[in-house]
Amino acid sequence: MTSFIIEVVVFVVLLYFIVKKGGPPLNALMTKKQEQIRSSLEAADQARAEALAADEERHAELEEARRTAQEIVAQANRTAEAVRVDAQAKGQAEYERIVANAETEVGLARQRAVEEAANRLGQIVMDVVERVIGREVNAEAHHDLIEEAVNALNADATGSAAATSGARR
Image (cartoon, rainbow, N blue to C red):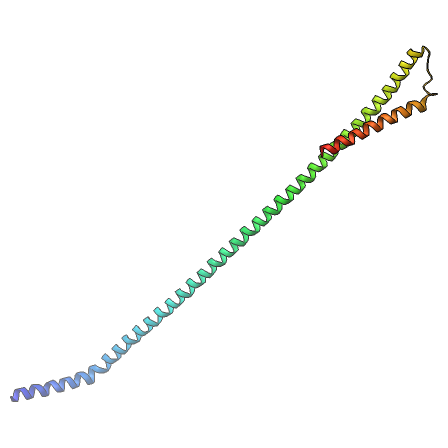
């Protein structure tokens, strides 16, 4: 039993020296390790927070890009519609101008044809009158009668042309 007591005393003395001499370095090492673990956890938390912030920023930028793309598409659609309407209006105006020019040209051609026919008719009438009477007729002396006949013919032709163009519209 004495040996047991001696062993216990030796154990207690050894334990005292180990705790007294080895405790502070071991405590310092454990404190250092705890500090490293704490700083690693804080860095991980900070990295996670930064990753979340970057992810939110990326989502916001992506959403902004989508809105911008939608605005660009909408503007392009509005521009295309405006161009289409403008082209249609210009086409309609050009069509109306061409039709008006054609109607004017047809009217002028009809008037020239009527005038030419009237003049020719006046000449034919004078020739027929000369043949019927058997002598030469002075056209200048009967100029008023010839002019009156030509004007009546022109009025007739103009009235029928107006009726024809009115029916066409």
